[in-house]
Length: 143
Ligand code: 5GP
Image (cartoon, rainbow, N blue to C red):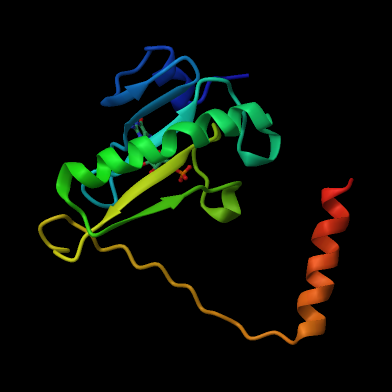
């Protein structure tokens, strides 16, 4: 199967602005950043996204996310950071190699091209509806 852009970056076949690398993880700037400092964190071992990723791969990413997020925050003294992770096209995934976005957020929007709007419309459900959802997820954890 044809390599994704991110596998080509790991293999050095196309250039990237690397900020961090270890045995399992590679991190580099998103070349089309949504805010100043937008950084990607990817595992070296290929998986399409979260659904087919080995637990150890997720653990290796989790181990370095705080370090990289802190460095991104400190670099421009941003006011917060969103970490996004898209799985499948309908959820916004466009490169099919697992990746995490570290997106710094700025009160000074213009200076840092922070035009990102995160819409988060909360719903109010009845207890029985929440319990039904809880049960459905628990049943599938056990599969
Ligand atoms: P997704 O939409 O899959 O969650 O995110 C893919 C990200 O990869 C996008 O934010 C996009 O800007 C970034 N991207 C696409 N092509 C390249 C590339 O060649 N180099 C780098 N560094 N980032 C890329």
